[in-house]
Image (cartoon, rainbow, N blue to C red; front, side):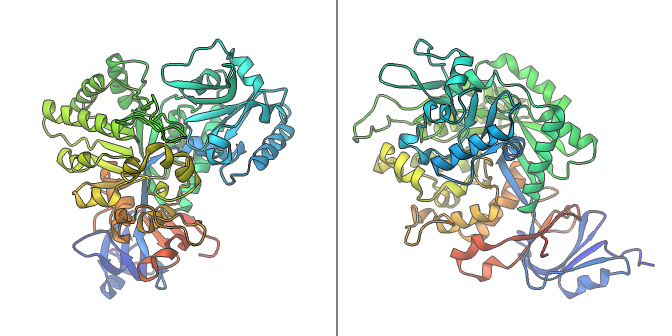
Length: 552
């Protein structure tokens, strides 16, 4: 019979990287009742009883579970079960997969899925004619990798009544040919003109998608996340019913914060609804305590909000500076009210104008309400004006980094840098400057926009080179590199802070929940350029194994 104080689980033979400044390294950890009861070295072995499971780390690194501070799991899980285009940039392969999916699903009213990359097409603009050649008889709707636009065929345009006379919506753009006819590419809110016609997925399909995504995230060591859109948006179905079904059936193993969608077509009248939804939706491991405000679009389609105009293909100044989806003075009022009600605000802020508008709104809330523990955070931060970098620390606004994007690749080099110009291009993804200024860093993937693998993102944060970059690819703005310890902390303790989970997770310390991940090596001891080769072997939530690699 086990000693009454024996641990349920002991992981030993370290190293253990605790993300705890007081004891950054250990070699053994003991868990009892889902919580960490000891962190240390040989003395932890005294807690091994006859019923204790002992995991020999055999020199492989133990970390706190990763936390993704910006992700769309149900959308990602849905795409995995549909026409999945994420893992190639070959237009011919896209069309082959679309035709194959349509042939395999003859009864499907719509052909959908997505994940194609803008770099695959000239100017990032595929056409309806390409899709018409493979699926002429049914509507096709395929969001791109960034989910800020959709590729549709002629049947989808007809179904939505979109033609040369259709006006652009206030929050989007219908791409057109020289005669004004739609070409098959719908940017931002224009995509909703088609997506609103698509049938809803059944509750069981939604649950299956969420559980599929949860399994993938656990396989990458992710034990908690912030769902960046909870509510119906464009082609994304409200994931709340799926979360509730998972909670009620005991299937939600991760801890999740839901960011309630701010309907940018409405104003302050929706605030009482958000208060009611926070109360109604929070259940079990799911808490709807954040509000998502998408303040701008993306740089590649020139909808990211910039302080000055984009350049044209010839390097001339254009008449377009992007879109601020929420009027800045109104944004200040909304954020101040949400802050007073105890909501966190999760901003999509990609261009330098959107970043400034979001920070101005946080500043207004601080001035009106005093310092509240609301932990507002700004995600993406592609272009940040240098004058705004120190404001993150001054305002207590967390920088939510999608570090995987900070690298030279075709979408950056062909669709972004030439249209920003050299000065603004040098302000992109200023992770190092944010760190040096004292900002709190969190990290996320934005999956399915990009890979959910934290180790790939950490690799880019440290190297500023994509894991699969061709040999000789230069580092992207190397002065903005992070050291490995900082990058790991952002993806663990930093995201736990953003999620208001830092009191119970985010580091390996006594009293915290045993959310843990075992890697196949210690990347701190190897060359930085090999970080992305690191794999997850085991993932634990509250001491219970939720993932094990087949070779673990």
